[in-house]
Length: 412
Ligand code: NAD
Ligand code: MG
Image (cartoon, rainbow, N blue to C red):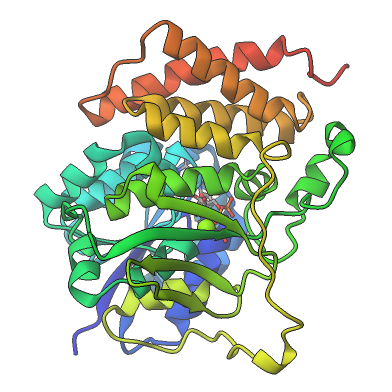
């Protein structure tokens, strides 16, 4: 069997390192051709030494000299070609020498590389949910036109993919237009509820970035950790699920399940519920999507039912987690409202992480942006990737201004 050539975008992140952990277990099956990251030279260099990619992308050109200096310690046959700058690195995702692209960049910054990979017909393992929320149907169109295979590695979507009948899963993988499927009653997205499920609501204003980033079950990057704490992560995932599986908002249910053992479920019309279970470890969905339709070892420990104290479920608390309601509203409004939601969230989360606004100002900023853009009728529904990025920029600018004058901004 010929080795599959993998390009990993966002290699130094949490999903990036989980992906490399799985790839390292299967050198006969996969080769790492491209590693790409934003600016962290040290971990990137360690990855280069271990995986010997032919090409490395480093978005931050100011860090090029630092990387090249380290590369001189390698024999010349092991030194990769180094590409710098956002546009050039994004281009790499569509190059001919890749079979698989792992889209693991965080935020809208990952949109263009994901797009390029889909347009070039790659097998794309999608972690970067933000690109699907912001660009919506355009992303699926380009996947179809390019003949790409789009496989979700977000754990909930990967779980649902696994619960679907095989033909239907294959259709989803081709970004096919899923007809209103009469067999499926609902998709059930599980959510851990994050670190603040039980914290008294009147104490929410005092939540610090460190507390928000300490997730009880999953170890993740800072942005998605805050998204989990506000439950905007689940909100983005509701929109991601609607797009990927072609279902409307009414057929998506969010269920808080603090143990994160059931990764999501499908309810069928006959009363059957099919779920995917396992340890909360991203290497499982990554291994699944790398090998699909085969199965390979992921390194994840088998689920020990005897050690489980129990599985618990509750409805999400709308007062605690207004972000979830906003996401359902954005999905129902359609058009570019999911893009507005996503862009406003990214700016608000950044402001929170920088200590400029309080925790509850995150949903407030998003709600204000959605109201503003609904009132002004725009931004228009983008028809190209450039238009998506322009609209994203406009919402970011507006939200940044809002955050800087927010009543909940942190003094000083
Ligand atoms: P992270 O912050 O740990 O890593 C982000 C990666 O993106 C880094 O390698 C960084 O160098 C790279 N990056 C940042 N800006 C970039 C740019 N402009 N161009 C190119 N690369 C850039 O994030 P993460 O937790 O690994 O999450 C990555 C994506 O996967 C997010 O979209 C997140 O929502 C999604 N996701 C993550 C998890 C998880 O468990 N971490 C689970 C499901 C989905
Ligand atoms: Mg998820």
